[in-house]
Length: 427
Ligand SMILES: Cc1cc2nc3c(=O)[nH]c(=O)nc-3n(C[C@H](O)[C@H](O)[C@H](O)COP(=O)(O)OP(=O)(O)OC[C@H]3O[C@@H](n4cnc5c(N)ncnc54)[C@H](O)[C@@H]3O)c2cc1C
Image (tube, rainbow, N blue to C red):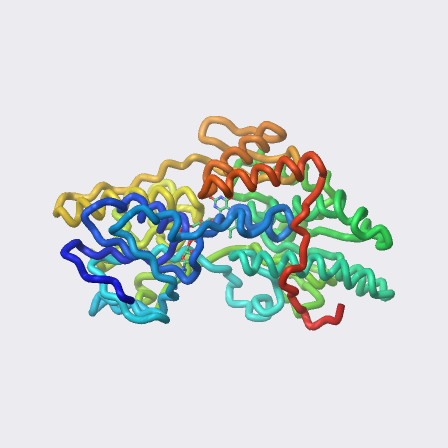
């Protein structure tokens, strides 16, 4: 990989997401060599992916070049590489561009969509975990309306305008809210010759409420907001099959749809060589101790979504969210330096800052430790927090300007089919 060996200990980080970037920043300018490997040359701000899917934002406003984040640090190297395996005996990572030796390894590979073994749903549904997937979804949504215009078959037209979202967590809820706003504000203007009132948005949720991880009030209010926007919420229903046309469930309920969006869960993105069953816990995550050391290894660590750290308050592991990843990255930075200097490491404690979700214009729910609120103020808080955590001044400005523009004009100008997504259909 053309990276010189120096006298400084070499720390290899796999993944430039929330955890990997926080860690690399913490190690910048220290007496260590830091090598960050990622299969993309950009960091993705996943919480706003749904806005890319629904034409509210362009993808480049939620992505940021990893090299630029750490350009000022001479001890830092980035390589665009897909890590294929980890050789724990030889302390090497195996990638598509070659092998690399490490003294310390940090796995920050995040998670991937969990289809719970249902290969049929994996084949036909749409996921929203990456920017390319969000662009595919954006294209499909728009292509569906173009195709709906052309068909005289009523059933086919309805299926094209029927959107079924599986999963009533923050991703499903936010996406449903955005789609409902498109139906109300954009479709009648863009497709005056189509009866867009027939467009349907459904959330199918296996639990008895949406936003299950949040407070009862937040869940109830989110449901109320969505229902006012015309979203149909089906609780205690589990999707069992989808053949690309018909969604069936464990009840009598079935949907004819061209678009099934799978937002029902994620699982750890493990890598070969470090995926033995004794290391893996619930949701395919690597079991780590309070110092983020992977079970059975002193010099291999995992942070963020891929790491399953069990605590008293979180017996199933910390939530797969940005905050645990960032906090673990920062703390591991300090801990690695202590470890290298043979000083005792400090155990990680998660500072839970709460959770939030937006349900569209002027509507959000926010659960902080002490305060829980919903409505317009919550929406401002949601926007402020998301702008604050976006990486890069330009991205913050672009997102802010887009939001103001969209708010004032009731618009979403990024409704572009840049890279068509073909679902075996002529349009
Ligand atoms: C649609 C959506 C909405 C979300 N909304 C919220 C929200 O509102 N609030 C919140 O707190 N969290 C939210 N999350 C969750 C949050 O984004 C994740 O918890 C967070 O990104 C985890 O950070 P991470 O560093 O562990 O992994 P990630 O940020 O996922 O980064 C992993 C990195 O590893 C790289 N990688 C993976 N495998 C390899 C490999 N083999 N070789 C090289 N590189 C590799 C990837 O390219 C990626 O850059 C959302 C997630 C999604 C998908």
